[in-house]
Amino acid sequence: MTVQSPENPSRRSRRSSTMGDMPLNDMPWWRWRSTVRSALHMLSDPAFQQEYWLAGREEYGDVTDAVYRLVEDTWLDNWPAERYLGSVFRDSEETTLVDAAVLRVLRILHQVGPDAPAATYLQHPDWPEALAACRAAHVRLALADGDDPEQPPRTLGELRTLLRTA
Image (cartoon, rainbow, N blue to C red):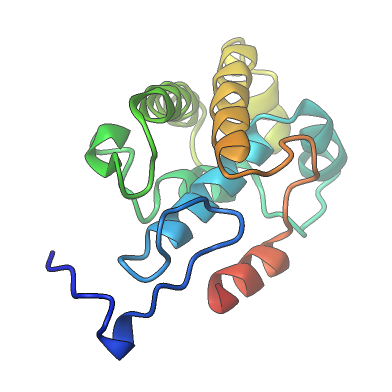
């Protein structure tokens, strides 16, 4: 990738207010980070899972949607998060935590199947371990971005708006 000088008007030095010093205009890293964070947030919050997924509410999609968002653009189901060190992820702690979360969630998805009801995932004996791994990654990424990890996850509509406007 060639980085153009800041004097080039097509590469203004616009920066995200919540994404630290990582520039928005170098690559679509911020979209990838946003979707990974969204998925980790939902996969890490048992109260959210009870209120939305078990209740069948659609504002956030289902478990399979969250897993898809976790791996869709980054292909974290095919290669390690370290591949995105310095672009999507800030440091090796983030990549290690994200890899642990992805592996635990995908193991359950492959055992249960992609279209199982939410209760099947949440009752899986390894779900608490996956939930804890997602929580550790979610908290680390949220704090690194200057966000409160305790805020509710963004709805699919809010996430779409964020990704279009950022």
